[in-house]
Image 1 (cartoon, rainbow, N blue to C red):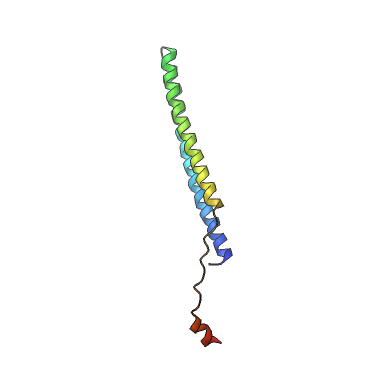
Image 2 (cartoon, rainbow, N blue to C red; image 1 turned 180 degrees about the vertical axis):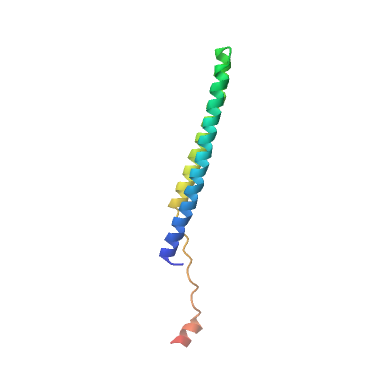
Length: 102
Protein backbone atom coordinates (compact mmCIF):
# COMPACT_ATOMS: atom_id res chain seq x y z
CA UNK A 1 0.00 0.00 0.00
CA UNK A 2 1.44 3.34 -1.04
CA UNK A 3 1.30 6.66 0.78
CA UNK A 4 -1.68 7.92 -1.27
CA UNK A 5 -3.58 4.70 -0.58
CA UNK A 6 -2.76 4.96 3.11
CA UNK A 7 -4.00 8.56 3.19
CA UNK A 8 -7.20 7.49 1.42
CA UNK A 9 -7.65 4.71 3.95
CA UNK A 10 -7.11 7.22 6.72
CA UNK A 11 -9.73 9.59 5.28
CA UNK A 12 -12.17 6.70 4.98
CA UNK A 13 -11.52 5.67 8.56
CA UNK A 14 -12.03 9.27 9.68
CA UNK A 15 -15.29 9.52 7.79
CA UNK A 16 -16.62 6.37 9.40
CA UNK A 17 -15.38 7.52 12.80
CA UNK A 18 -17.05 10.92 12.43
CA UNK A 19 -20.30 9.31 11.25
CA UNK A 20 -20.36 7.13 14.37
CA UNK A 21 -19.45 10.13 16.51
CA UNK A 22 -22.20 12.35 15.10
CA UNK A 23 -24.79 9.56 15.25
CA UNK A 24 -23.99 8.86 18.90
CA UNK A 25 -23.99 12.58 19.67
CA UNK A 26 -27.40 13.04 18.03
CA UNK A 27 -28.82 10.06 19.96
CA UNK A 28 -27.64 11.58 23.22
CA UNK A 29 -29.09 14.99 22.30
CA UNK A 30 -32.46 13.37 21.58
CA UNK A 31 -32.30 11.59 24.94
CA UNK A 32 -31.42 14.88 26.64
CA UNK A 33 -34.42 16.58 25.08
CA UNK A 34 -36.80 13.79 26.05
CA UNK A 35 -35.54 13.49 29.61
CA UNK A 36 -35.50 17.28 30.01
CA UNK A 37 -39.12 17.59 28.92
CA UNK A 38 -40.09 14.71 31.20
CA UNK A 39 -38.27 16.32 34.13
CA UNK A 40 -40.03 19.65 33.52
CA UNK A 41 -43.40 17.92 33.38
CA UNK A 42 -42.71 16.05 36.63
CA UNK A 43 -41.31 19.17 38.33
CA UNK A 44 -44.41 21.20 37.44
CA UNK A 45 -46.54 18.63 39.28
CA UNK A 46 -44.41 18.71 42.45
CA UNK A 47 -45.98 19.85 45.70
CA UNK A 48 -42.72 20.92 47.37
CA UNK A 49 -39.47 22.50 46.20
CA UNK A 50 -37.60 19.49 47.57
CA UNK A 51 -39.43 17.14 45.20
CA UNK A 52 -38.57 19.44 42.30
CA UNK A 53 -34.94 19.63 43.40
CA UNK A 54 -34.66 15.82 43.48
CA UNK A 55 -36.07 15.53 39.95
CA UNK A 56 -33.79 18.31 38.71
CA UNK A 57 -30.80 16.63 40.34
CA UNK A 58 -31.60 13.32 38.64
CA UNK A 59 -31.91 15.06 35.28
CA UNK A 60 -28.63 16.94 35.78
CA UNK A 61 -26.86 13.70 36.68
CA UNK A 62 -28.03 12.13 33.43
CA UNK A 63 -26.97 15.24 31.52
CA UNK A 64 -23.47 15.09 32.99
CA UNK A 65 -23.23 11.41 32.05
CA UNK A 66 -24.18 12.28 28.46
CA UNK A 67 -21.66 15.12 28.35
CA UNK A 68 -18.91 12.78 29.56
CA UNK A 69 -19.86 10.27 26.85
CA UNK A 70 -19.66 13.10 24.28
CA UNK A 71 -16.20 14.02 25.50
CA UNK A 72 -15.02 10.39 25.45
CA UNK A 73 -16.27 9.92 21.89
CA UNK A 74 -14.64 13.19 20.79
CA UNK A 75 -11.35 12.12 22.34
CA UNK A 76 -11.47 8.71 20.62
CA UNK A 77 -12.33 10.29 17.26
CA UNK A 78 -9.49 12.79 17.60
CA UNK A 79 -6.98 10.10 18.54
CA UNK A 80 -8.09 7.98 15.61
CA UNK A 81 -7.75 10.87 13.17
CA UNK A 82 -4.34 11.87 14.51
CA UNK A 83 -2.85 8.38 14.57
CA UNK A 84 -0.45 7.72 11.70
CA UNK A 85 -1.82 5.54 8.90
CA UNK A 86 -0.63 1.96 8.73
CA UNK A 87 1.55 1.57 5.65
CA UNK A 88 2.20 -1.97 4.54
CA UNK A 89 5.68 -2.50 3.17
CA UNK A 90 6.43 -4.89 0.35
CA UNK A 91 8.41 -8.01 1.21
CA UNK A 92 12.03 -7.63 0.08
CA UNK A 93 13.01 -9.95 -2.74
CA UNK A 94 15.34 -12.78 -1.69
CA UNK A 95 18.98 -12.21 -2.63
CA UNK A 96 19.07 -15.13 -5.11
CA UNK A 97 16.19 -13.56 -7.10
CA UNK A 98 18.09 -10.28 -7.30
CA UNK A 99 21.18 -12.08 -8.66
CA UNK A 100 19.11 -13.95 -11.27
CA UNK A 101 17.49 -10.72 -12.44
CA UNK A 102 20.88 -9.05 -12.93
